[in-house]
Amino acid sequence: MKRSENISLQGRRLLDRRAFLGTAGLSTAGLALASLLDADGLLAAEPQTVGGKTPIRPDIEPNNPYASRKPHFEVPAKQVLVIYCPGAVSHVDTFDYKPTLAKLHGKKPPGIPQVTFEGPTGNIAKPFWEFKPRGESGKMVSELLPNLAQQVDDFCFFHALTTDTSAHPQGENFMNTGFTMEGFPSFGAWVTYALGTDSQELPAFVAINDPRGLARSGKNNFGNGFLPAAFQGTDFNAKNPPNNLRRPKAVSTSADQGTVDLLTRLNAGHLEKYPGDANLAGRIASYELAGRMQTSVPEVMDLAGESAATLKSYGVEGGSDLRGEYAKNCILARRLIEKGVRVVQLFNGSDPSGGNGITNWDSHSDILKTHGMQAEIMDQPTAALIADMKQRGLLDHTLVVWATEFGRMPFLQANGTGRDHNPSAFTCFLAGAGVKKGFSYGESDEFGFKAAVDKTTVYDFNATLLHLMGLDHERLTFYHNGLERRLTNVHGHVLKDVLT
Image 1: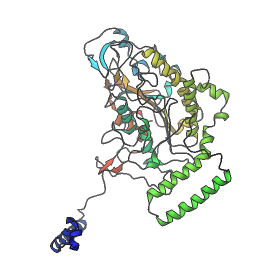
Image 2: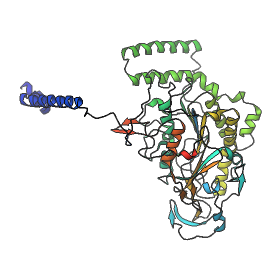
Image 3: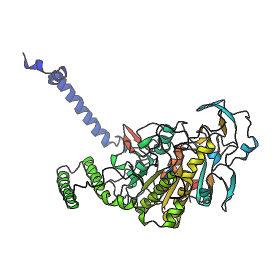
Image 4: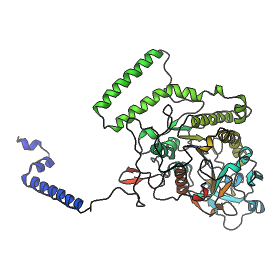
């Protein structure tokens, strides 16, 4: 057998003299052309976003990916707390007062669709809770959330929000990652990718899950997507610390420390061999952070030092067990902000398989009971958290975001007791550093059915959040699969009317 017969067809082509010379000639010509184009300044320019701007790449130290980095421009907000309510809170029963609903209660005026997300529609329904003017601003808020209602003079409401989907998983994805599909970085991941953190003992981004479990889209709500894994959220709550941090009883403190010291020396030696390997450095940094968390996490989770007055104000005792657990999560959120964690995402609601108002705000039936149950869990602890942060001066440098994925319809479903999904109008609010107080932006129509004045997209909302953190949403990008990807895709405008 000839030796050439053991070589593949492609291999024999590479050994062909004419093919070799032809390839070499073309390669040489290509290099010459590139040289001429470069001399004339005609080579491709620096990478640009779809808007024609130059991306701003964070200067990330491979050995310390969590190091604090400067924002694109100076702003008051240095940290952000996101309070996320899965299931879709009814805006027309909480913050978006529509007196027309009371006038048309029980009627079905023209223009109401025959079918919505979950089937046939019923009649217009007035709010299930009475609205009253609150604070010096006189903002109308319902009795469903009496504690948050007392703080409206500190809030900046968005009343004309719209979204691209009426399905919960996609809605959560869209609000938290800017895309309805899976696999894109979350808002928290983008912020920590850009800014790192001032705390080197705790994660840059912590997701505090509801006592009942993960939200519908699970870890995608706080995932890193295609960003480096170092920037994903670390999830734990007041009841469940991060896994695998506790030292086994069979291992002594000295033996554990000796192991850590040995690993530090071995890792340092390995890095010297591969000084340019950012992935290796990032993995080592993650393991080292996990080691430091063995001390820092138990300390921040220990609520024993909180005063009886604080525990009472948050509602740890005296309500449902779920309210007590969520109240502890709220205290944990404040403690994490105090420790310098860059992004804290606090969930109020769970259940990846649904729950129809039992585990989240998704009230397709008996909204009086199901929204009432969720509000009992969320209202007092959340209001106490914001008030506590204000009293401690934390709102001077922290942006607070209260959000849900979409709203609910002003009319009932055919069952006569629940409201269906409404992607065409819903309400979220901000508080804290950089935003106007006692202010409302945008309006829904007289029914709360569709955005009517200053219609706001999720892209606009996220662009504004990034701006409030000192980041240009058009220039904070990551090159992935041939595209300069960003949180706001190719859309979004900063809503400057809400800025101080």
